[in-house]
Structure formats: structure tokens, C-alpha cells
Amino acid sequence: MKELVEVIAKALVENPDQVVVTEESDDKEITITLNVAESDMGKIIGKNGRIAQSIRAVVKAAASKDSRHVNVKIS
Image (cartoon, rainbow, N blue to C red; front, side):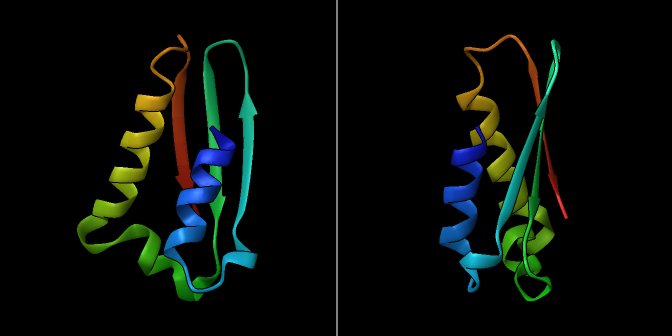
């Protein structure tokens, strides 16, 4: 999941070298945290949060084979 979020984020931002993705997991949940440059935050969130919602939807669809819940945090 981490690699998927990283590829999507790097394609959207102007500073791909500042994209940092971390993944934490336990038995029930996977938490993916996406950090981008301050100037790229709007590109990742999008109007009314649509891009952020789309990223979350893609990750959840990719994780549908796994029984754990996936959270994507953008900061």
C-alpha cells in the first residue's frame, strides 16, 4: 500500500523528492501517513478534498483482499 500511495502522490506534486510515506500496521488496521511539501498540499487535497478522497478510495480498493481496515492520513 505504501508504494501505491507514494507513486500517486509523486505524480501529483511539483516536489516529488519531498514526498514521504510511512506505514504502520497491526492485526486490524493499516495506517498510511503521507507527508508532502507545504506548497503541494493543495494539489494532494484538491478542491473540496476530491483528490484526497480518490487516493483513499484507490487504496481501500487495493486493500480489499486484506481483511484489515486502511486509513490514509495526509499531513
